[in-house]
Amino acid sequence: MIWEAIQRAKSEKLNLDVVWLDQANAYGSVPHEMIQLALRMYHVPEVIQVMLHDYLIGFRMRFSTNDYTTNWINLEVGFALGCTISPILFVMAMEVILKAADGRAGPANLGGGCSMPPLKGFMDDTTIICSKEE
Image 1 (cartoon, rainbow, N blue to C red):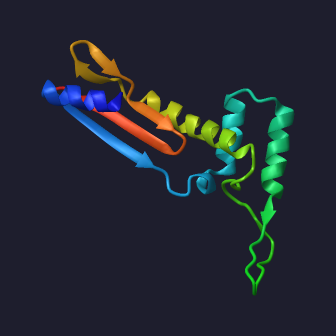
Image 2 (cartoon, rainbow, N blue to C red; image 1 turned 180 degrees about the vertical axis):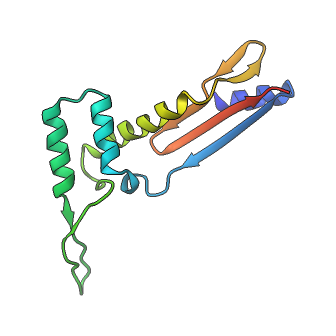
């Protein structure tokens, strides 16, 4: 879909800006407050919100090598990979960001009455597409 938009803009000589973003350390960088906001935004029952809050607040981990084991540390931001709920929570948190940004930009004009939404997202990859009128 984005490739087609680029090709159409090229053939019709339209101005089109495309930005691809890939969030570094995606799972490890989501603030716990963002997760709670997403849970409220999507009307997750309060009992589940509290359970997930307590889980994230109480999550501790440590690392070991052959010669050394760290002390236990709290997971202050993000969530651990391998947890079955992590992908769902991550996508919900990313949707909060996409929905907040979506209202700020109009659809990209591709000429001939065609347009497309300015934001596309998949997991931690986001594409922003916009057109400029000359």
